[in-house]
Length: 397
Ligand SMILES: Cc1ncc(COP(=O)(O)O)c(C=O)c1O
Image (cartoon, rainbow, N blue to C red; front, side):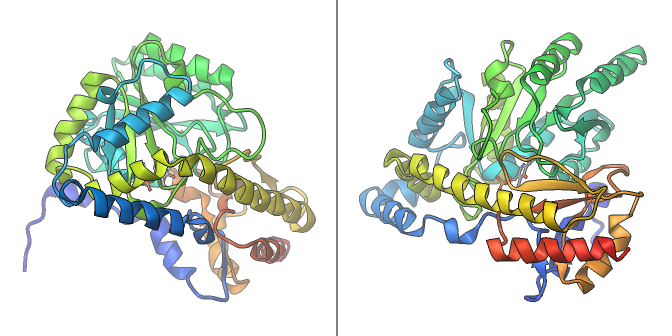
């Protein structure tokens, strides 16, 4: 059958990450490859309690279609959560509940990206955003990251160069806090400079912030959304990392006009996110369970992150560098002597350890000698043994 698929499907690429993950499923392999929360941490009993409660008390609501912007009590909870971030003027009209952040990203692409539009991203960045926006024809300009987040001086140079040739980028996409894949957090000074540049060059910022609440050490840095004074930042957040990704629930907070457009795009995507999960999550939050749960995750992941740090110091040879993640789920490791981590990958599997190759996180090349390691999913003994295997592998090159 010749399906005669739409030409845009030619731009759809399978995720390298998902392909690599398939290779790492064997039980003898210790995998630092996935980006999964620790499954032993899911609050099963409490969630069960909340789900049963909403089914029993409001069945005619939770089994029914819902409003596109989201179940009102959950939007009210998001407003409260946003206030805790230091944002005072957020109302439910600034909120759209999404079928997790990935839908938020997809909808932003749908309403923002025209063929050949330039989008600025960090190098490295979150692969699934590149995949989502490429379908709409986005062209990417990358700005390097270092330990302080996006290099805003490089951003300024690139914005200026584009302005000279009449190019106004559509948006700046950043994961400023506990970045995926690099684990780094943008400093306050750089956040302020980034906002200044966004205002000067009139380019909105998409702040993708799934990990911001998972801080183990150090002092919190205010979100870009909370620092913004001109309504030019769009905040994407999710319940995936603070509760469970299986819920597929997240939210966008932004200027009302932006939210109205997002809702219009969402209508044709899925009408509304599942009311039953929204109501159960609202109940979960109302009972104070999120506030109880997040510190538990932070404590567990903080220990795992610390164990990885200890193991890396013990087993990795000199010259290997890694980032200091004060939260989130990832560390970015760079090998010396330009070792290509993609070429090394089959040997890693022989050594029964897996990672994601650094080049997977760049749109047009980069990160070849780096890898992303996840510390939230493996157990403490697996972290020690897995890093030992990684060390043996690197020493064997
Ligand atoms: C940076 C970033 N954005 C968005 C997502 C999507 O998360 P979800 O759709 O589960 O909310 C992820 C998931 O790993 C991520 O790392």
